[in-house]
Image (cartoon, rainbow, N blue to C red; front, side, top):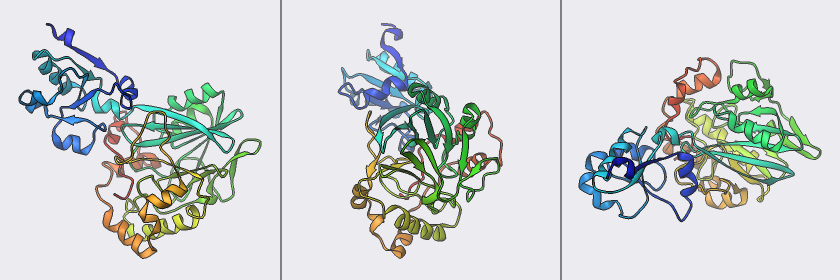
Length: 366
């Protein structure tokens, strides 16, 4: 039987809805163990390519098998080895490089507005389109700006404002690209040191989306992860916390090499700006880590009341919080200084810059 009869391909977008379904395939990652430990699709089974023939009995017969590697070459070799033994499989097009830029979205109603959460599944990055009436705001856009423009077009919204929650260190911001393409206003916190033109946030500002529907801006400025970390609140329904609070932890305070003072600032920001809010307000973070289960069609979000009981760091005293944060920050994002310079505007973005982002986000205290 020819390889063509036993080997086919599958895109990351075709794979994505299968991951939460009864048709979930057997994900065979043929990279080396350290590569898989560093970054992988949840639920993969790892057999390095060099060991695959000797361990074929670990691949279930009769299962739908998808082979995975960094870019596709080793996965193709793995599929050919399986085919040599009469086993069919599908090669994941583009491998983990393609997974890094694979998105899905979910939407719902909060405080009179529609919130669309875009999940960059291979990176753990979350961004948002918030719309009501004929206008919308985009928070923390990535470089794939067509994602946001298509959502706006589908809802017949005009993008009026683009916001970042902070100067990102783990991924490249698409804010300036989206502003250039849409004509929207770019609002940022000047406490983070951007070198390009933007409209500075200030306390008390809000963006009116429709009568009675507004996104509150910097009245909830929350230094700690970065000096200019800012949250955005949608009435009493939702709060977009950036890298201040995640579902599994809080933002790491060490990226500016001032871990102790930033940890104190982060503690005060959480206790003065976040915890006084209502229990039923829904927290939408900018990232999620490997411990957070992501399901197709369900928000990556929790009510603040739930997080009060599930995040032990929120109940620590200030001294204990600072000691915990200092003791538990590890492995900074790869290339983070390079990414910060690009996002701040002090370094030009090259055509190859997107490769700087590859790998998981490391924005939380582990």
